[in-house]
Length: 398
Image (cartoon, rainbow, N blue to C red; front, side, top):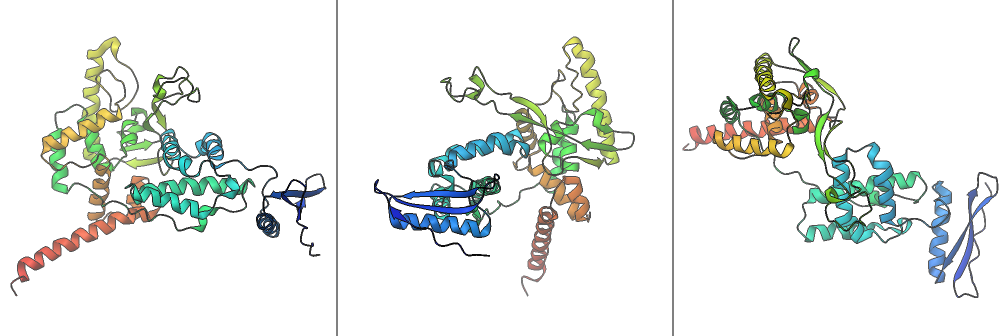
């Protein structure tokens, strides 16, 4: 292939340095030529070299002025991310953009973003006491958004892939022991929705999956349940672009749809789980009690088909559900752990009982077996601690 001559760089009457670089061919067959205009000759040379490098790799950016980081992130969050993320995840993305990405990188042109700027943002997060896992989430948002920009020709490279990602060390996993789990279930006996906690500790459902469970997806005769959706609270957002003057999106006259909504579950989109016989009986008892509440409520009953409801048939609110969990732990006299740690408890107990890791993976709905292997590591560490204690007890004086 004939090597094209290096473009001529000249200073114009306006004081700027100009060059014209041919980077390819347009769809109409004409040459795709880019005009370079910079204040100094060194800046012009750098831009010419960048365009030539893009031409060699075939990753030529689109003609015209590239958007800023903030304007591209707004496009990404509005048009691209919703196809992959649920509303709660999008809300989290927007929060991280407002708090970190926009203040540090927002005004930078997307095609002029440098790896050093990302490093500086993560360092600022560390100095303000943010966990490394928080910085890792921001890094993943930027990496994905820049990858989409690269595919669309807005940038010539994904600078987020040129740096080391924040470590993102996971906090130590918390869970209940088998004895503590039994005490929790004993304390729940006789309470409304007692089966809610049996489902959490026996099957390890996420909170949204348990609250979104409906009778139409539970077959007590065959002992199976489907997990097609999860119940999540979507935060109301401004529909006016922030011009209404109200601080909360819920108070905006043009607010977006919010409140409790059924969304796709995290991880595997849908899964069917076998229900242990003792849990089947608890769910039968729960259904009979719910039928009694329906009769008592009469016309005030909301026929929502949810397995776990308020006393008028409406779905349980996640915040009320979480408070009920904390009250239950206090009543049982066990340590306070997060509601999500009930899921860790179920997984740890299954692994400790010798259930195959691939079976545990399917029950929990993990997409990657490495996530499930983390529970096996915890069980191994607990076993090691137990044997060490026995060794100290029996051989400590030797």
